[in-house]
Amino acid sequence: MEETLRIRIDDPSLIGESRRLVLPMCKILGFSEPDTSRILLVVTEMATNLSKHTPKGELLIRSLECFGIHGLDILSIDKGPGITDVARGLQDGFSTAGSPGTGLGAIYRNSSEFDIYSENGKGTVVMSRHWSGTFREGLPPRPLEFGGICIPIKGEHICGDGWDAEQSEQRSLILVADGTGHGVAAAEASRAAISLFRKNISKSPAGLIKQIHEGLRNTRGAAVSIAEVDHANSIVRYAGIGNIAGLIVTSKIAKNTVSHNGIAGLNARKIQEFSYPWNDKSILIMNSDGIRSHLNLADHPLLANRHPSVIAAVLFRDYARGNDDTTVVVAKKQHRAPPFKWISRIL
Image 1 (tube, one colour):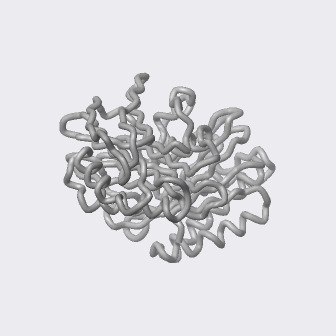
Image 2 (cartoon, one colour; image 1 turned 60 degrees about the vertical axis):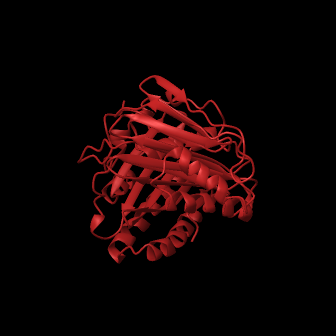
Image 3 (cartoon, helix red, strand yellow; image 1 turned 135 degrees about the vertical axis):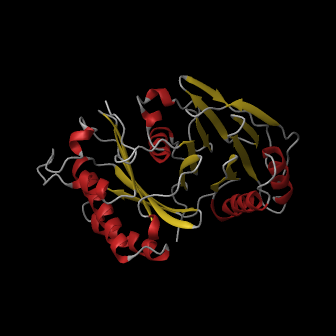
């Protein structure tokens, strides 16, 4: 099973195809029959909305694991006309396409976690997250929430990029790796970096980078960056080799992180750790060079308030180069506010 399933909804026949492709993922991840039915309903409603309202929409469906609990992240992404009144759109009976108008409301009601972001004339991103077993209503609190998209270049089925995260009450660690080139060999380098990251999780970012550099010598190498959010001291420690970009956004201030030139496993003349301030409103963005440089969160009003998966989806939609493997990871503190499941005031 691929980690991320990408389905472009450019024909009504793909609504049923989406359901067919998601069903095996539900079985592998251990979802019950009732939960699987809810997930298939969500996928159907998302695909139907895309088919009706935009010619270039797509679904991204990613497997999740946290605390040993399996889940699915389902994202609907489009560049359509946008939704003028999101709050009204979530009410049953409201429709702009002559349908019964139950789509968004049904997606919301059947999700463990839900969020939506829409801009007039620019498009909409809808997130529906699902957890298996007794955690259907969401996971226990944790310091940071993550959202990530990892997509191979067109023509490849395996992404040469990879990312991973581990966290405790004291600190959260995030790794992004971009294996040199594309395809299987690039993916092997990224997966080796992730394996070394997990085995040496107690080390500092610089210590982890050194370990990964030594451990990738039998691979084609990778660009690798690691960020550590120290919650007790409110700082981010960051170390990297190669062109993984990092950005820390706090209010209206955006700070680019520093990585040194080189390729982990091949050449790394200098490994150095840098520190940056962090607070409860900060957002960390890390991406491979499949995302254009100089991305600007401020170009999207109120996007910083959204769930990290929605932020990552908007950045992927608007900044992906389209000619390379693409990864973007977003981390921020949880600000969940029941009963709206991440829906806050939307202007």
